[in-house]
Length: 528
Image (cartoon, rainbow, N blue to C red; front, side, top):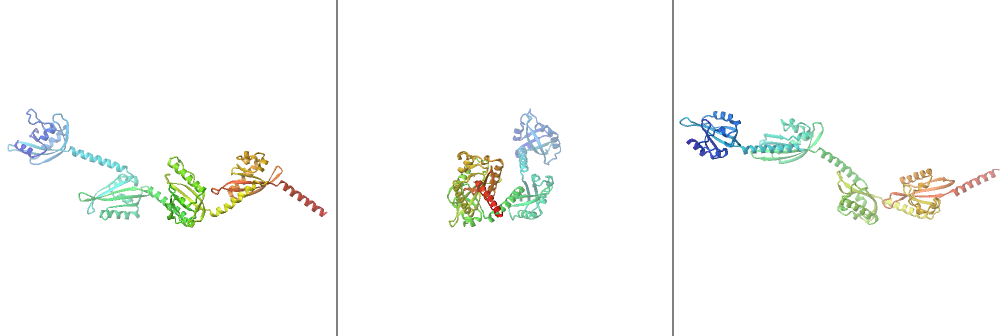
């Protein structure tokens, strides 16, 4: 036992000493505590089989019998139990040696290494790797990594299963060759991609990003984006980590947006109209180049200025900002459920020289594809010349309207549907109803069906062509000459009303007829 005592004394850890029949004849303190054995108690006899699981007995017996004198051997995954309760305690690796003393007595010395914590760590590492793998597989992007020595020799490569989603190829197609995904890269992009990767491997750069094209399994070209990073790892090797994502949809959207912006820019730079945009504080965000031609102001000098700087005060200006304020309030209160119709108004502007311009302004909310409002966008159209003509027309209309109230002809003002808006007393006499009862009634309801259809057609023509019309008509042995002309709005210049003047020419027609008859009689007498 002297040899056993000496070994135990100089061998820290969990140590058991067995005799030739595998009885435990000595144990370190740690072994006694872990396995609940007491060597000092003469009534307690334990073998190695009392402290190991039954599933391991045959293996342990064969292992111990195979030992050679003086040689150390190992056996893994031995389950040790408590000698008293037969409860599993830990999994261990055994290092064993057999010795023989001068009397020829064999002794087994076992050093037991508890690997429970190691196994737990291995399991946690495996669980962590599994979780990480599940995360990688769930991502829409695929991960590619390669480890290599400083001389460039690859030692390990990896590609995540998400590559199936992007390329359409099964994962097993890439398993034997993780570089195989590069075979799918579009020829025109492959050289540049490989050059960038080579620059990483050789240390000329530590990271890069690139958009490139790949050929999908279905034959379509897809756009991808790679973000790659070079890392220095312990052990004298390096690692490239790359994430490749499918950006086809973003490329399509960006292409459409670029086309739209190009068309918009072409339109805004080549039209005489001024295209503008405002924020919700009515500050100018954008003015097309045509602003210079219209007002003399450089568009860039007006960015950030209040829009009111360009407008002259007046009723229509006040109306414009009231309408904008209403919309802003609805947006603030989240009570705007649909985009409102554009605001259209005629307004006066100032030029850089102080000259007054008349413009037609059309403005509406500006929203992105998700219908998120971004501000206001509008168009300014120079209508100065048109406005001057219109003012002459309106003045003529005013004079005509005023004269119509004193004229012996019948006068009535209607809207597009034929609703009576105003009339003179001659109409009262014809229809035999007072003015206040006729206002708001439909003019056509007082006509025969045929006459009503004729008036409707002529009024429609006036609204569509903005030109006056005139025609003759006969009704109940009476003859009339009717004149219909358009009335423009003072707000936006649109035709909103029509004035109808009806002259009774029955007596004139009779006089003409009598004159014709007298002339015919005179000619007859002269001939006789």
